[in-house]
Image (tube, rainbow, N blue to C red; front, side, top):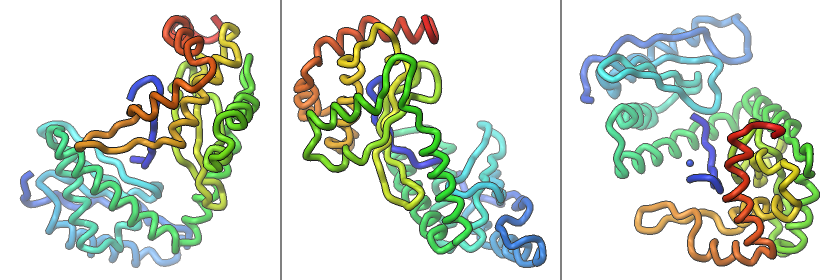
Length: 288
């Protein structure tokens, strides 16, 4: 699981019992294999503490390659496998209790209350993992490298339109007094069609920036710069007016957002093209 906030134009985003034995993989880390006993001892201690919290049929596995999150695979009526990073070897009983609670919720039928509880646990667990990585030089270096690679993969130049130029024009005309928009980076989506989204990312120095991804369906000869500017404006507006929670519901396109959206000079032309042309372009495929 990777923490990722998306605001999209095209759609939103046991019972306790005797646990199965803990499976452990090779020791993680970068210190080499000179001290194999230490991870093994830590795994035994982790197993002893996990037994107090794990539900029946839940297998905990240390996955050395995991860094930022955890994975869970299960079949209804069967065992579940929870793969976690090596940092959980030193997790407190409180964190293990939260992890077990998350796993039990993930295996239950979804409901608004359970979803909210699961997301709160995810936020807490992710914060704990990130805090551990902050004091780990190796993890920090890996994080910087991932951020640098992510930025290097950004591709604003399309076959028909240069998103960087369109973003600069939109920012100058509509968001000159919003420095958060000036920090934004933009790219075409990584696959054909794709979604137009706005999320938050970090550069190699840990500085946050809005990352805007535009559907490749807009990179079409029939889409004028004003039409592409409409979807770019829409995603920039998400940076200025983030989602809010009302009466327990997450509101992405509220009244204020819709009012501001209509201030775009070519709003009607953009929305008409988006509704009438874009679905067919995506359906027919690239270059047609």
